[in-house]
Amino acid sequence: MRLTTIILEVSLQITERGTQSIKIVLGLSLFCVSIIALSKFNNSDLFRNVTKSFFRFKLLENNFNDETRISLWTSMLLNLNFIISLTICFFLACTNFVSGNGALFYALGLSAYFIGVQQISFRLATYLSGDKMISEAIGNLTKQIWHMLGLLFLIISLIWALNQQLSANFMLLYFFSLFIIIVFRYVKGIFLCYKLGIKWYYLILYLCTLEITPTFLLYYFIIKDLA
Image (cartoon, one colour):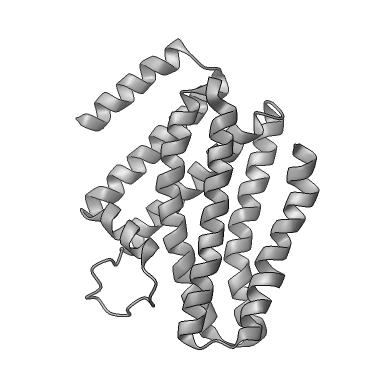
């Protein structure tokens, strides 16, 4: 009932303000709200589990007694929410520089890059090093980051879309949040790899060659050109 009330209130605001693209953005955001509601139905302690897993600096327990464990179905829903919310925030940010199809093109490209690097890099590092512990540790870390980011970016995108006059401020907040989370991911990844006893040169291979360097290249060839 509460979710229906929220949808009706936002729908009235869509009618009163915003362009067609903002209407689509809000529609997608409401779809993500539905995804979170369904995830919460499957896991009553969803928000506590996501938050606790995100800030936990220890290895994932491989047993069914882990109270923060999230089911595969719920994890897939949270990942879907992350992908959509990430793309929405990139789109809203890009509208400050380009409009229409141009903003959508950049948003899809940036999201695909961000997701692709985080999915491919640790698998490639595992293949090159032959150490399967890298794949397991960083894979679990990536899911924890995605779940938390999805919730954060959904909140930002909803408020951002309804307050277009503050778009520049929300853009700074979004990129600052994204930067902080990326740094946190590196720090937590280093800590987990250290706990696993992974050799330091494999860690440098993973971080510098497969994640940090592509990020700098992205900034130089795309973000800098866009700005």
